[in-house]
Amino acid sequence: MDPSYACIATAPVIPSPVSREEEERREIQFEKEGFPKNVPRLVGDRPSDRAARRRALESRLRLAHEKVAIVVERPMAHGRCSIFGLVVLALIRLLAVIQGNIPGYSVYAMHFLTTSSDLICIACTVPLFVFGTRGLCVQKGCLGPMLTLVFAMTLVDLSALGAYLLVATPRPLAPGSRSIVDVMEAIVGVWEWALLGSVALQIALCTSSWRIYKALRMAGLYAPDKPADVAREKTKEISVLEIMCEAEDIEYLESFELKCGTDGQGKPLLQEEEEVVPATPTFT
Image 1 (cartoon, rainbow, N blue to C red):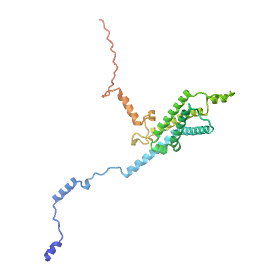
Image 2: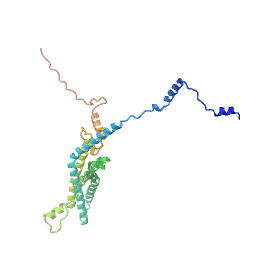
Image 3: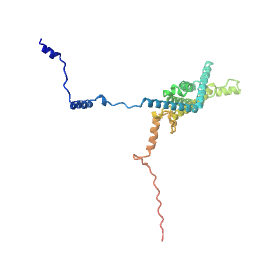
Image 4: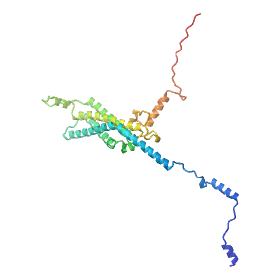
């Protein structure tokens, strides 16, 4: 092989010099095609700002929980007493069944409904009244459904009491029994007293749950209207309709009420006609 060809083959390829105009043209072309310098950067808070906001949020949460703890102290105590009373009623009913004291066929369904509603109320309210407002019942957003369920069971209990008052009849007395205790037991027995006690305790439990729910909503610790309202006190009163409806539904109903009597331009549909008083003639 000719050495001259070997030198040519092994010689490094030296790139031709590029003019300044060519470099600028290439840079412009890179920018158009998405040069890394032109990639938009995500604008976010600085670490120091995020830490300051986190500390401020934690401080607001701590103060809000302290205020709510003072407000819900009595409703918590009332609710726990109501749950304890419902547990005692369930034990009394169990002892009555063990002793053979079973309600009659005509009122059996009413007592079954009230017993079932008591057990459901106990099961669904224990997490709130045992672990308090910082428990999972509030953190997982279960307080609203729990309140609705307790309200529904209270209505079931009241319906059972009303049906019992319409259907029930006094039991016949035993021959020769004329004492006041026997007469009272014939008119109102252990199941009747349990029914009355169940209605009273469920009403107290529903009222206590509503007061706790309202305090948490007013403090911004449960279901805030927007993320910025967390741990901030609400100036708007909480509607009692939230027992059965969502807050968004109530806002829609309120806006519908405002627009119901107006046309598309905000003017009232019905206007009161002004009474025109005829002018009295004057004589000169």
